[in-house]
Image (cartoon, rainbow, N blue to C red; front, side, top):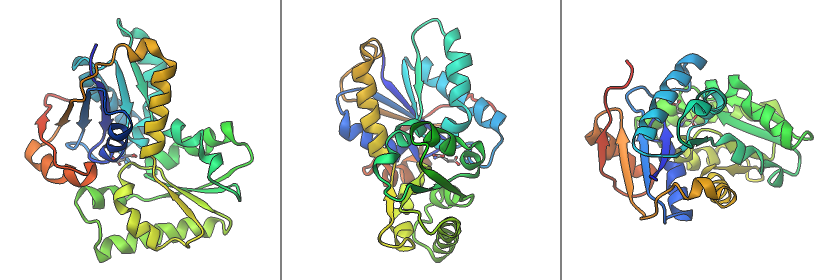
Length: 274
Ligand code: DGL
């Protein structure tokens, strides 16, 4: 038995973890942020897969049987290969879940016009994961995507409400809306973006709904654990949280609180790839 692992390329997954903690506070958790190698969103498929796999293995080594990739880029580029190729080779029961499916399976409840906008990293956009997954559940929904390559570096650097950030947020939001005047629902399909929520909201017409993933992922995890008692019984309960980063712990602690909503103490995980 062991804690539930939560992984992201940096701080973004903390916005999801915060909601998971709110919904399922009884479990033990370990969070790992690969801050030393963030951002993932502009990297190749092979690189994101290699980095993600390595971090998932770290979490397995910390006794996690269930790991949530609280990162859209990793979910888009690494999850399927990990699930189909790597997990079957594990001696013990190990499960890895992502954040794309919990979002795409409920998106149909939010849109009336059936025109949905996706704001995401270039990697997630290029993977086409959102259009493909949404089509599986809701063939009648048209999906429009806009890559926002600078948003993650801006958020990681704490530039949440500066004129420079406002410029890039307005630009990408407008580029998305120009693709269809009928978009009535926009998904923040990157776990870093909830930190920019007030700014993004400012540039969106009022009638357009703006969706963060945290609560959707938390609800989906609760449902998953209920449906999979064989996995649930491997997750220890005690309500503990531990935080690790592949970079400097003091630096991580300084910023992580903004994402998590309260101060945290972190440890360092070293000896990863380059
Ligand atoms: N938070 C990650 C996501 O949800 C992206 C961060 C990155 O580019 O590393 O896509």
